[in-house]
Length: 191
Image 1 (cartoon, one colour):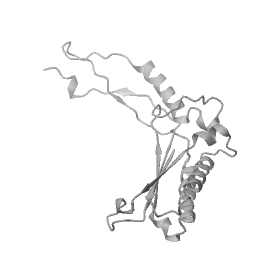
Image 2 (tube, rainbow, N blue to C red):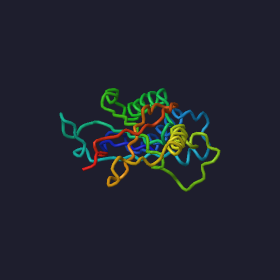
Image 3 (cartoon, rainbow, N blue to C red):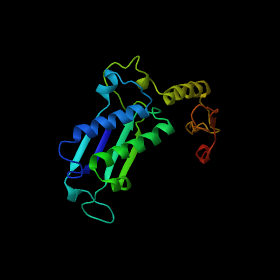
Image 4 (tube, rainbow, N blue to C red):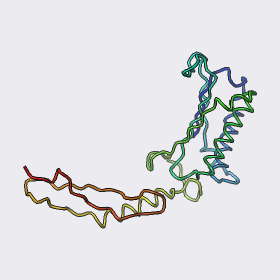
């Protein structure tokens, strides 16, 4: 999903459709979708928020001419190269449609990944490569299986204290999983 926030008079009247369509196609290219089908085209949306010019501010000016583009994707959909390409393409689209080459210096692209499970649609997704479970979700499933195998109650030295589980994930980088360890803390000490 794409949200564009700009002063109402920054883009020419009637250009919302062109802006939305070009940004959606730029996002699909960045996701690695070479030939978008109906599912991609019907589920990649852009919302153009034209704001009254006095509602857009920077630290330096009232009625600022800045543009904010926020893109929210499922986790792991955009590679680093895809992110860089999307920022370049989205900024170029804003410059082209606004007709102001200096707009590139006042366009902010915010790329956000929704938390796994924090996005969805009731529409069926099976067989659509860019909308299948992300690599991050698969990794987290593996990590959950490791946690389940390692999880056990650890009794503190005092029977009056409640057992505590403290997990430290040693490495959260993609593709790696390290064993989780339980570390005692001062909370384990009995009164």
